[in-house]
Length: 458
Image (cartoon, rainbow, N blue to C red; front, side, top):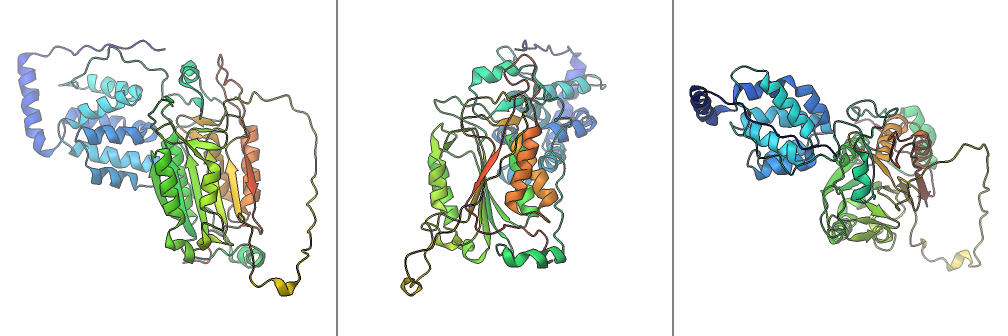
């Protein structure tokens, strides 16, 4: 564990203090101190790449540096980089206390390495008035978020504290997710494949819900999901590019999740759209995901809300679910490779004893036309990188953005499995060194599900 750093404030002559104080009074009308603006400017690129905003914005809101409207405006931007840039554009206009409050918020959200960067730059400028520091005694950094850390979606805190020097090396070079671009489907491909696939022509294609829990309370003492905001931003951007109308829910209790998922399932828009997506990002256990209150919502209850009995508006329409959460506590250690192939035969059809004349109305099984992708196998932990987001969501975004133009969803999830299979953690000295993860999916789809991005053209 890193030793807390005590920083003393350099002594300034009385005249300097008075001048600086006067400058702040004037800047109360028009903006922050020029030196503070310069420090932000000199570190703009690093801040835009590395800031983790989800908790930081709440601190700035609490300190009256930003308003609710400003927070919503920032969160409306697509992608974490764009959101960070929007905040950096806003800060210099928020008065003389904005820089101090920003530094304090960085410290309180375990982004002290960025605060240190700003203060180091500030100390090199002339006529510096360092921000007022609250005592750092009692503060510690369990790990440096400047590093890309593999962490589990379910590991208890004592396991995560062991990652103080861990870095995912080979697969995590870079500071954040790339800007997504979805390749459009060609008219020729659409004509060749649309007749035997699910109908997907409505605009929007359907409603998508991204539910992301990052800050946890309650008796479970679940850790802050560092990197969770990256997953959230990535999926919002991806689903929008695929033509979906995206709804977002952040930091919900188990009861709130159940109620709001039910409200989402009953939205009348489902009647006039062709599909639906639900993405759940949280800590989890086998068969369920945690609300921020530490209580569990069972996944079977989620699926029940969207089945043919409870959601008739989505009958015979494809429903996609993506679950980024642990399904147990075991870290997959992997095994030595052994070649082998197996082929499963599809079961034959059974004829019904009932004659056609008895079928007055088409009946459906209670649950059908669903496909669900899981980040990991039953009983195992899902891995999340503290800067790039979870392994699974990163792979999902990569494959869907590149191959949705010519590949159906089930085959894309096979490709996601392939990427996850190749990935390996790098954290010498911890249980996460050379750790593995294996994603999977289950499906009751009855046709190929092509997303046909960009077709028909607007």
